[in-house]
Length: 373
Image (tube, rainbow, N blue to C red):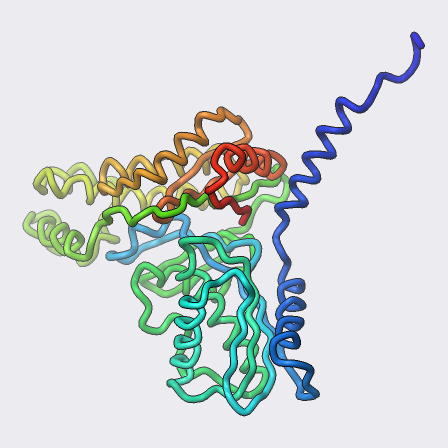
């Protein structure tokens, strides 16, 4: 007994439990989504000898995009690791089947948007759509759904007459641009002025990181900066000889921020500080993603949150409560969090530790919706 192997259960059990927790939160890959869409098509509309087509698309989620809602510039968009799967086949009229994650009202809205993208004409196809719905993100999911539907029907010779990003609200434009180049799990750098985007390559040698969304039910939208705020800022800056030729807030350099603030009233200084510093954070976070520096990304998330609350006046009580609860866990493997919607926070952590943190929060508050993305 003196030289026998030490008991292994205290180590193996927690380790296997962690692996099980990670597997329980695994997201569906594009091929799995497409297979489920094909099965849903048969289940809802029956077997058919007509040839079909499938497609998938990632779902974009805002990372650092709020500052380009009313002024052009650089933004960062995160592509969720699980997206949308679509299967379609020729038919005499359009029929659309959704999986059980979307309620009837949202399904009707999406049917109308699909039809409108074909100039409202009757689309001769049966379509099945599968995706993992997350509360407060339907607008983002709709972009991916339209993209995947258009790709699948194009294979059948049915082509959309308008792009998925046509006539979109400005708040969704960065996401639509990112969708053209992004793949599941990517972080995409978007230039809204030039309508261009590139995928930020991650460092493959660093420890795996994972994102998650935590959503509190019943939250309401927090106040945001408006187009009028952007107009007032630009008008105020142009009143100074130094900035008389400024054509856009995007053109204001960070090194000129102090001089620009001195020309504005106190009520406009916070919004300007937010717009300029958020653009700088986009560049810093891009570098941190390339390095795989989770600690730096987390710090920038916290700084962005503070800037939105203190400078932009965007105070979301429900999201702040979630952030405080996550901070109270004092888990070193959780890097940071940022509110991205009403009562919703985007969280970054180490891949093996994040499921445990989500599990703990949901045990304490069963009404929360938590999802690895």
